[in-house]
Length: 405
Image 1: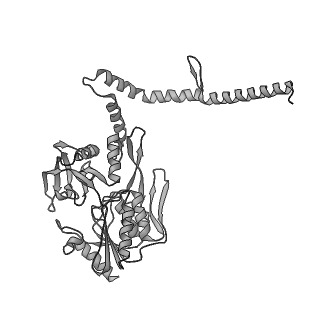
Image 2: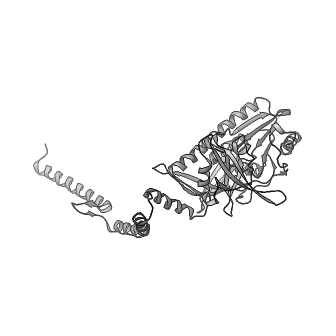
């Protein structure tokens, strides 16, 4: 049985421990009295620095709210400030996205949205350029081409720094029309400008199309790399393999890219044990994407052109550097930087360029592109693909190369 003196000692020890813990906690976090919050000096100094840093923003926000002639929702003003924070980076691929814009971006990576069906980017001189129309979509049927410049949408002029705004206008309710003003450079160097009226529709992107050509040569076209692409590619490849495939042609023409995770999963199936690509941040941190020993053990040709960009160039660059196949066509687009998408709690998000990627031979192709091993130019206005193999000289050359192996 515990004596009174011993019990009292235990109580005193418990009180001292509790007091010490409370004191340690309040030293770091602070504590509250009836009318004050007491915090450590270093915490106070940090808050004062934060206040000084943003006091101009707060002052301007209040001044606009109290004095602007017209009614404007404060949340719109604050979102404009956030957009400006990313715009000042002068990087067309980095942007703040409202909840609506962020949702639209996610829809695209999932392969379905409503619009005209075109992939666009920004040139160094701040123009909106067509990377490629999506096959069998309204933009494709209306005759939009890789290299076309979009100067206006519904009569309103848009430059590259307003790319998201232009894209949002091009999207819309299925069955409604949108007018696109196109500036096009002809082969003789002359320039033309014209309007195209395009009817929006639901765009469901089937990113993989495959068939067996004559002489047991497999053909897989990849239109973009989204969340489902690598799984669909594997299904197509297994189907061709069961048909005694002796060679493989992968068509990346007018493929604007997509998810790095998707293209590296596909490369893993094709290349054998090697580096596929690696990314490098501003401070030199690298992330490597590798493939294992398994590979497709048949001759392989990759078809590329000026519309092959980003993730397409990761695959093309890996195949070229590892000599796993032959690149046929024309030089690729030249986008060698990687964006990270970060969702925010309110449904908005940011897209930020965080790294550049390199081919296995340490080459960054941003603004340069990848040269084919065999240069073959497709005549203007000639349809490409197996349905027009009689005129598709790039595909013909790919078949010839596989037959010679």
